[in-house]
Image (cartoon, rainbow, N blue to C red; front, side):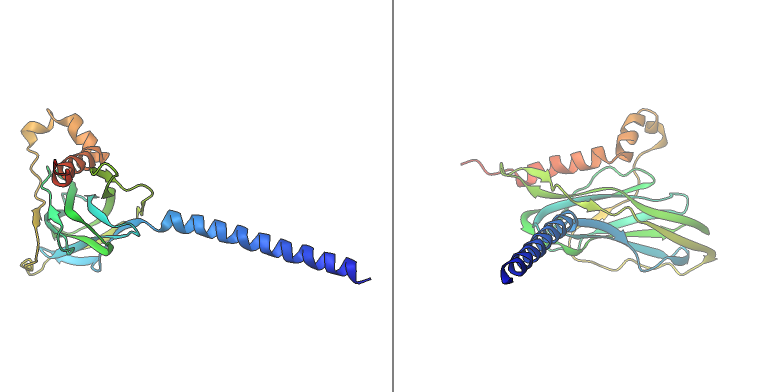
Length: 229
């Protein structure tokens, strides 16, 4: 009489173990997909004309990185980007062409860095009263591959959250930028109207984030290129 009960009990235990294993497997896959993530945020969404808003590029990565690149979309009629910095020690700024409406920050380090928080800080000056948005256009974390060259880290989840900013038409006090350690990238657009028609296809590629990432990888290739024996 006890044997059928024991068999039923064993089947239940086996089913419970199988369910637990499947649950852990699914959880592990979800964690693996979200372990590497990148996003932007700001603590100030309401300001006056002439005041500065700081947008931070943030990331969490279980893999140490040698650099990163991020392109932030904004309305040039409402905001003027001024500078970009990285609080991570050892990150060197890479100057890249700046397009009106797309702020580009790229940094690289010859040694791997742990990233768990702010990667970069971008400063924008409010130009006039308006309601506007700031969004991440494209981004990448960069590692050194097996050959020793720069390559984008795969599997990074980029959050496409849009930041809404309300600018009052009333004039606020101009805020001097705080001195920071490390490289300071100038984000003033340098694409002139005279050359915009000639470089129309280039601007299109910039909007897709292709050229900034490729440019950074090339720059990092030069920076991280292994020394010849």
